[in-house]
Image (tube, rainbow, N blue to C red; front, top):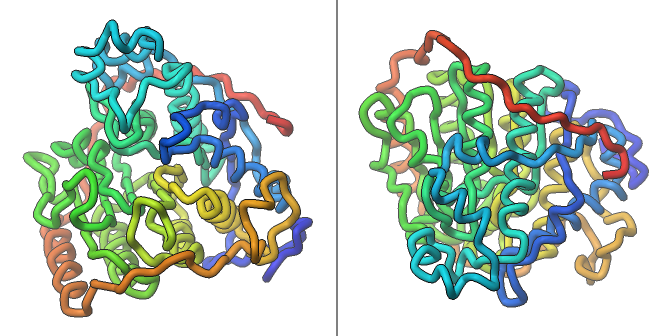
Length: 408
């Protein structure tokens, strides 16, 4: 059932069930700036929030301003020396620390921006806090669109990502859940998250991405190591994939993963650079096709954390994550965009589901798709049952006093 821009509607999700949704947002996030020529624009989070507000979606969720992460929390995954460096480096001192900037990869893709450390604390705090909310059962679905920076490594930045909020959120979830599934629908391989959990069976990483694109990892044969063997799942695709072809892989593979792994929580990275018309990606996904991934995982009724990620065409990203917030709360949004502070970005049609700005020939042929799917499903068949873990001494929960805030 469609709703008007006032948000009056009944749930229309595929399973027909309402979910308690918590939306984590700090209005400061849109003020951070990578630079005039850089493709990463944190202001897209502010734009998405403004759309949510004008679609009246904020009334259907718990709106929470998360506290920022702390130094010890970042060091739960990252090396102390790397985080110490993030804390002290500034644009004015980069020449003095040129060698360390090179060591930690704070270069052109990951520039030393103003208030860099505070930026990391802000977006990581949102993801850790959202995971804590799921742990405390205060919500069924938690959303942090400022998170999802999946390339950052233990001791270096990578691919526009400084700290890996996803890994930090998953570590938080593991305090209360034996098995966590990570699904990545960004056009780029989720290498930082996969690397962090490559040798464990407590986290399964599942990445759907474009082959032969940065960072050049995520081959179908990369399946994990030691105890983590078969718990890393990679689904590389060729450029130009359409909604239908994407879901001939996504749905059967996710269904099999849910069957054999039986995760107790799911983290979905919703990178919007897999949409048609992105400046860095070469897929043909529509917003509905992208959002179908959220809808499908929502239907399993497992605690779900939704995070942002890539997305470099400003008119696409806010519409995508707004639509997927609607999916989370169980409403179908009207295609005509409500008046909002960024209306000029969405012309000339001013619709939620705009025709793709550009398309590429779909190089994903049926035989190739079947071959990849068969290989992945065969690997998954080698998992006889979901691993169980004895909880020993559990680390303390994140000490984040989040604020219920209707005006954040």
